[in-house]
Length: 622
Ligand code: AMP
Image (cartoon, rainbow, N blue to C red; front, side, top):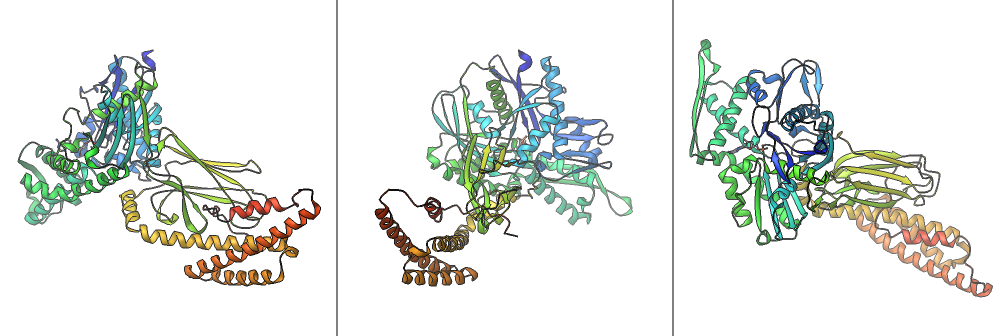
C-alpha cells in the first residue's frame, strides 16, 4: 500500500523540496546530505552521460567547474535553450530530470521503499510548453507524473488544509526565478482559484545580478578589470551577491570579501572588498521589486475584488524574506502577510497533499479547482484571434466550436493555436500549427469543421479539428516546441493593455472585411438561384449595391466597407422579401404546404452571414 504513495515535489529554480503524506499530514523528506531542501544545481563531472553531481556538491562546483555546472534551468523549461556538455546538447528537461532523480533516490532511501509516482509543481504562470517540459522531466527521471499542480495552489492547499473557515486568500510567491500572485477562495475542503497573474522571469536571481553588476562596476573603477569576462570570477561574484542579499534580510550591512578574484598588471593579485548597506541594497533592488506591483493589481482586478476583500496573504518563495518585499505586500494588500507558513516548504507540502488526495491516502474530501493563466484561441479569417478559452477559466475545461472554409473548394484548413491577450493573431504567441486536409470540394462556408480545445487537470492543452462530413480528424498535443524569449509573456500582456483600443479597431476592420466578403457571396448565390422571383427594379438595385461592395472590398478604407456592407444588406433584405412573397403566393397556389427544394440550404446559409465567428482562415483556392 505504501508503495502506491505519491510524493509531492517542488521543483524550484534555486532549491527543490520533496514531501509525502504520512499519518495524514505532509512530511518533508530529508536528502542524503540531511537537508530539507536540495539546491537545483547539476554538475556534469565527466561528460553528459558520465558522473553527475546534484544538489549541494553541484552548487559548490559552480565555482570549480562553471562550464559544466547548471543552475536555474527552470527558467529555460519549454524553450529551445540547450546546455553544451562535451559535444552533447542537453535539454532543460534532461537537466531537471537529474535533480528529480536525486530526489527520487533520496526519498527511496528515506522511506525504505521504491517511489514511482509524483505530483510536481510549476509556477501558475507557466505556459503550456513549460508545463509539458516539466512533465517530461519527471518522466525522464522515472516517475509517473500523476499531476502538475500550480505552486500557489499547492501553497494554499497546505495553508488551508486544516482550516475550516471561509476565506479569500492571496498567495504571493516570489522565488529565485519566477513571481506568481494567485487569489483563491477556500471553504471547507474546496480550493478555488479565482485569478492568477505573474512574471515567469522575475526572481531573486535578478536582484543577485544587479548586486553583481554593482560590485563589478566598482571593481572596474578601481582596477580597470571587467570580471564579466572571467566565468569563474563571475560565479564567485554572483554567489557573494546572493549571500549579501540574504544577509541584508536580517542585518543592516553586509561585508563582501573576495580575495584573489583576478590578476592585474604584473600578475598582481586583485581582491574585492566592499560593504553594502540596506539602503544601498534597496536602491539597487527597487527596479526589480517595482515589477511586483502590476501583476498583483491585475490579479485583484481579474478576481473582481478589492484589496479589502482579501482576508489573508501567504508568502511563498525565498525572496519573500526580503523586508522590502514584505513592505510592498503590505502596501498592496493593506495588511501584513501571514507568518505561520514556511515559505520554502509549503509548496512541496501542498504537492504531497495533492498526491495524498490522488492516492486516497487522506481521509478527507478536498476539491481543488484551478485556472488557466492565459487566453487560448485560434487564428481565423483576416488574421483575427478567435477566443476558445478565456484566461482564468477553471480547469479541466474544454470548448468546441464550428468553423468553416473561406474559399470555394478549399481542400484544407490550417489551425494556428494561439496563447495571449491580443485581438489580432500575430500579436499572440504561437503554441502550434496543424492542417486538416482532404476536405471534399464544397462551396465556402459549407464544410463544418469542429475545433476542440481541451485543457486537462495539469493545464496541458490538446487541440483537435474534425471535418463533420468525412469524420476526418487531426489533433495536436501542444508540446515544448515554442521558445518563449525572456519576458515575452509579460511583454505581450503589457502590450495588450497598451494596444487594446488599436486592436479593437483592427479587429473590427478585419471583421467588416470578412462580413462584406461573405455577404457578397451569399447575395450573389441567392440572386442566381432565385432569378425569376426577383422583380427587375430590386435586381438592378442589388446589382448596383454588389458592384459598390466589390469595389470597397478591393480597397482598404474600413469606412467605405462598412457603408457598402450596410447598403448591400439593406438591398439584400429587399430581395429576400420579394423571394419570400413570391414563394408564399406559389405555395398558396399549390396549397400543399411543401417547401420548394433548395430553400433549406439557403435559409441555413442566410443565418450564417451574421455569425460572429468568421471561418477558419485556410489556404486560398488553387
Ligand atoms: P525559491 O525559488 O523559493 O527556492 O527561492 C530562492 C530565492 O530566494 C533565491 O533567489 C534566494 O537568493 C532567495 N532567498 C533565500 N533566502 C533568502 C533570504 N533570507 N533573503 C533574501 N532572499 C532569499
